Each structure stands twice: as C-alpha cells, then as structure tokens.
Image 1: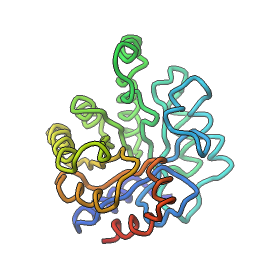
Image 2 (image 1 turned 60 degrees about the vertical axis):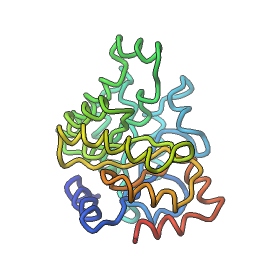
Image 3 (image 1 turned 45 degrees about the vertical axis):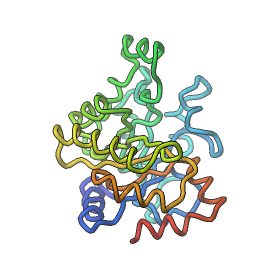
Image 4 (image 1 turned 180 degrees about the vertical axis):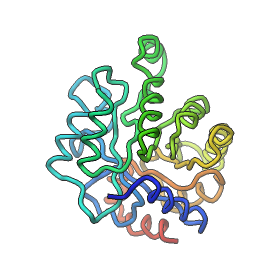
Amino acid sequence: MMQREELLHALRGRVRTGVPILAAVQSPLDTTAWDFTIACGIPHGVDLAASLLPIGNANQQLLAQSRQSPTGADGPPRVAGIYAADPLLQWKPHLAELRALGYCGVVNSPSICAVDGHYRQMLEDHHFGYGREVEFIATASDAGWFTAAHVGGVRDAEQMAAAGADVLLVPVELERCSPSECAAKLDAIAEAARAVSPDLLLLAHGADRIATARLAELLQQAHSAAGYYCGAAFLREARQEGLLPRLAALGRS
C-alpha cells in the first residue's frame, strides 16, 4: 500500500515535469490513466448527490463495498470518501479500518460545501457543518494520511490549508464558463490557500460534458491547477463518447 509521502512525491513529480495530475472517482472503467482514485459510499450508477440524502449511511456503505473488493497491489492508490459531518462517526476506529482495507488517503466526500442557504447555516450552527469536515481532515493529516479536501471557495480553502490538506478539489463549470473564467477562480483560491500552506496541490473538478481540448486549455491557463479530478458523470460521458484514451494521453503528455 502506497504511503502519503510516496504518493505526494509522485504527484509533485508530475507538477515538476509539467504533466497534469489526473484523479477520478473509483469506477469499473479503465483506471490506467489515474494517479489516484476516490471511492465513495454509493452504489454504482447512483449520483454522488444522493449520498447527502437520508437514504443510507455513506460511511458504512463504503466499508461494506471495500470489504467485498479490497484494495490490491495493482492499480492506482485509493482514497476513501468520508462523510465527516456525521456526528455518530468515530473517526479513529473508522480510519483504522480503512487503513486495514488498503486505503492510503481520505477526502471529505460527500461534503457539506455543496449545500448553501438557510439549511447550510442551520447545519453549521449545530456543529454538523463544514467545520467538522475541517476538523476531520486535520485529524487525518496529523495521523499521517494523505488528505484531499473539497472546497467551495476561498474561506473553505483557507480552512483546509490550515488543517493540513495535501490537495484541494475546486469545482469549476467548464460547460457554462470559459476556461479563462474558471482559471481566474482557481488562481484566486490557490493564492489564498497557499498563503497558509505553500506546498499544497490544487485540482479542478466539476464539469460533466466537456471536450478534452477544453480541459487542456483550462490546465494551460490556470497556472495554479496541477490537474483535474473526474467525477462519475464525467466518466460516463467520456466512456460513451470514446474520450478515455484521449484523457489518458493528456495525463501522459
């Protein structure tokens, strides 16, 4: 099982040579292109947004799926998605079980940063919000885990940087905004976060239907972005349109 420092060394090696980091949600698709994958506690074919609904326990579902398909020596390093805002989740025993199942890292997924408005404020007021996710990332980082963090904006990024996150996952909307607009957002978030933690890496994510050329343009313009995290919807579109080989080539360019 790859350790945190080993994975970070590999990712930073990509950055030094100008090759984009490519990560993806774990799926049955070919994974030879990925530098790491993220496993989430949802059944295949169900959108990640469903993991924030009261229809199951995402953390326990991930454990059950992982016991059925444990991490092997082959394939990219696996990062476990954790719903850290769950007030009943005991972090240390949960992390120990994930370590035994072969995971080398964790990420706050699903994340409360996808929620806003009055409901978000209510969650925050009762300590079920993003602050708890920040505390979890800090706990995992102190324990030697590779840590990735979903962030919604500058304030989230600053908090996660202070917590010791190694990688920030920043949403972009390439299907609605130009690469230059998305690049400006990424650079602003990176500048704020790196004022706190200069060595952290930043990956863009969020688009469903985009051409690999458009993704390459984003990565060229956003000097702060080290690569891209491909979600489930992106992978479905890529498979249907035959884009996976071109995506893999982008990660080997």
